Image 1 (cartoon, rainbow, N blue to C red):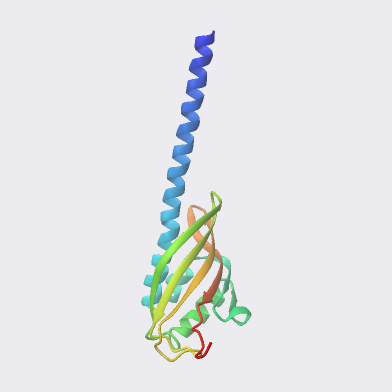
Image 2: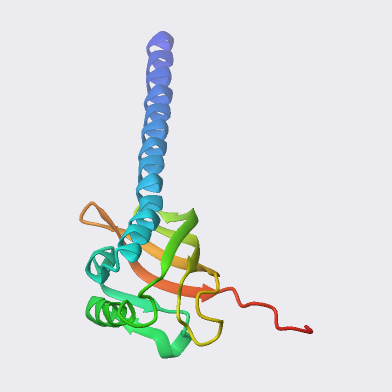
Length: 165
């Protein structure tokens, strides 16, 4: 009887270990997929493709641009309309670079992604046109029907130090 108990104990330990390894492998795959969102964002931005950017978002996304409360876009339609317009005005010559993406897990299907970015060629009001800019996205991403989507986003731009400060 004792030998049989030891066999079951070993079996249980192996099963738990395999489950942990398998779960870790899924998390690593999901993390790579989440990081790929930053690359897809870069590619869509550089093609001035607001539709492809919109496809990375959940239908009911809350997306706060660097404009803060004045740049709070609710849902895909508002996001796509605003970015399609900006690609014909402020960002016609903009080049985006996703510098790095860092993932923090909340649940197996929910994570925070911090995306460091930089741009050149922008025509924004607060810096000389074309001056390089940088910042950080904080994305809340969720796996929905097997696809990782951005469900909320906060974009924060690094501000240059003012002369004499």
